[in-house]
Image 1 (cartoon, rainbow, N blue to C red):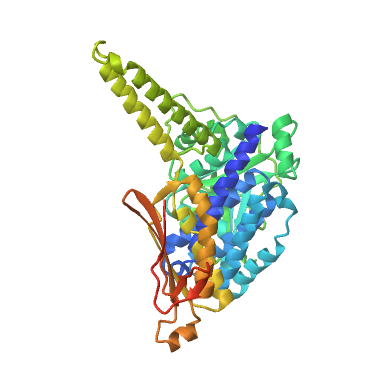
Image 2: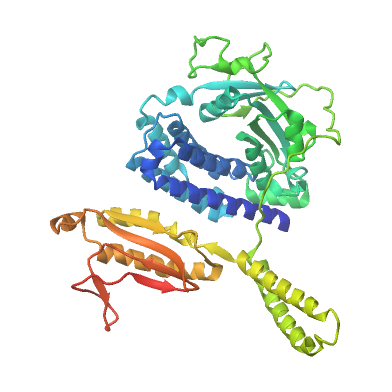
Length: 508
């Protein structure tokens, strides 16, 4: 049970990092319209949230992420131009996903219908072209065991892109309890590894016996129920190499091919007028039979035909090694830091005790020097593990400034420098509240309205800066502004001053 909760915490941490990435990108509205790679990064972030949430039966997160994915998919295709009102809706939906993730065990009790309808409204009213023609496109794939899968909209587009670039399409079939929980790196790491080897385009979850995250944990603990998962992936790797890279038996990976007539245009009832030898169909062999496409992506109710078991991979199956990182709980780092401190004290005692014997015992001096060097090195490395970039704090302020600007009717520009400067985790956490308070005060009381600034001969937009740098063995943070001059008086209040005061500085 503890291990399973660790897997869920891993999902929460991973999802939060994706949510922060989405928010940071949405605050760069101009860049979204001109940088396709930024749109791709955001799309993949939302897609990853949806995919990993499906592992745990988090239906509300999956549903809302899918609605966001459709909007970003239209942006990727150039059919939606990013506008200010669109960013507002996407930021709100992203905040809603954040709330669901932060209270993941109660996420199924939340209502996400408002944001889903708002996102769907964007697709209906905000597209430069008719989005329905793309969202209703269908593709039917068939497995080696004659199982059929129907895909629409954004997922169909992802499959087309993969096939166009020569990718193969596989379904990875797993059971949550018997397979995923026995997979040593956990479901989130497995999903990320699949995404690194190709593109996870969709995941199916059979929740026949599972209705909530609590059911998943209970099933994993008691082993009385199980969740069957199907993950559809496109990759350039051959089947054997792909299975070997994931560390899975070969029978867990099935090849999917486009079925004859399985690609329809815009969901029209009439037969497609396109050349039947279209690009997608040229890439795969197709059986003769067809089935009607269903909405979204769903399994056919047809049972797979019984066939000979697929042989397990031989011991010589190629295996790809992927560089990765691990998450360590901060309490472990704190314990290591305490132990390193005690080790330094013990070293000092040892050096003092044996100092008189350095010349009388042959070889003692280099041994003591080595112990001194290694102990210092261990302490420094452990201290480095607690260091975090100050950007973890700074990156929260573009959203704060945007919201303040709208609420106050002011035009404020935020500049950030030195976000790579590292400080101890405890200092980073202690900086968040006072910095937020100072930035809000600078925007609220220091920056004039655009009209007042214009009358005074100033640029319409005021500027607030956050800067961090190292100087003289100290880490210094500054908050320079182009605000109306204010100064700190002995009455301990910010009061207007005739001349501009120096930037506010902090050192650590």
